[in-house]
Image 1 (tube, rainbow, N blue to C red):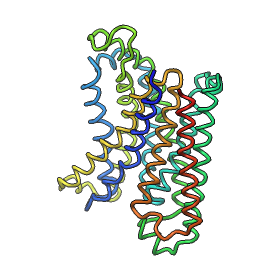
Image 2: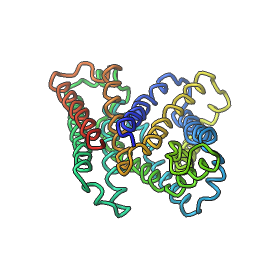
Image 3: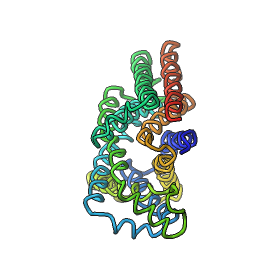
Image 4: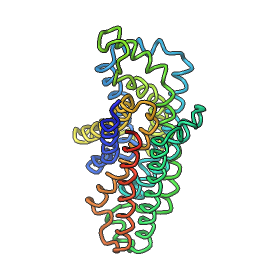
Amino acid sequence: MSPILGMITFALGGLAGAIFLLPARGVKGWAYESWWLVYVFVGHIVCPTLICWITVPDFWGVISSTPGAVLGQCAFFGALWGVGGLTWGLMVRYLGIGLGLAIGCGLCAATGTLIPPVAQGKAADLVKDAGAIVVLAGVIGSLVGIVFVGLAGKIKEDELPEEAKKKAVAEFNFKKGMIVAVVSGVFSACMNFGLQSGAVIEKAACAAAVNAGVVAEGETFPWQGMPVIMVVLWGGFAVSALWCLQQNFKHRTFGDYARPAARNLALCALIGVLWVMQFVCTKAGEPMMGDLKYISFAVMMASTIFFSTIVGVVTGEWKGTSVKTRACLALGTIVLVASFTAISIGSK
């Protein structure tokens, strides 16, 4: 176990989650559904497959030896997560990166962290000792931080003129954004349900690594969770691809694929790579956490909120707001930092 290194790994995943949509600002001439389909193909299919091929010996053998029920369960949760993933982009579209990710990730962290242990009959693990209680307090504290960040967004909605709001976020709409954020945050938590449902796949990956001489019997194989990510994302890709193609048909935007722009393709591929790294870091850090691996999703989500708040400030999403609004935002960010510290101490 190496909890501090695990926490750092989760935080790097949060950084990737905070910045992955920034390249989308440079995509020109393509409909929303067109560039979204290219991004999900790279992020959900190409990258996970390549990562598994590089890190896991005989990874197709690992997948083929897994019971169909386990694969189906992981893919099913991935499909539910796909609904949240579709609305994730809309959430940022209406609220901006800073506020949108704060609200969505907060809901996602709460449901994604606390429900899996309960659903697996391990609710007692949440309060089994002093360290676990401190970790739980940190998770709750991160939600308090989200409340303050969300309040700052509501004040921003009330105090800024329409022109100023549109300048920072072209389609800013707090009401629509909040509705989408709730849907996105709750459904996106299914990603963690899927990731935590692949224990059988992880054991098979470990066995394959031992047989290939990559690790010795009893040693931790840090890449054991990569095939789980791949299977979960199969379900997510199916949902996203169907929606994008339906929107292409509805808006008659299939022509976007017939005139590919190298710049757009490169930017969409970058979005996909950055996006998948948040979950690669999440699963790579879990073996370092021992019994407390369930906090991985909360730390990654909270880190995403922290970094996305910084990105929102840097990109001007809070420009022109009052001292009261910025103070509320700062307080929420400070609470988040304190929560990260509590989770780190509890883990150690």
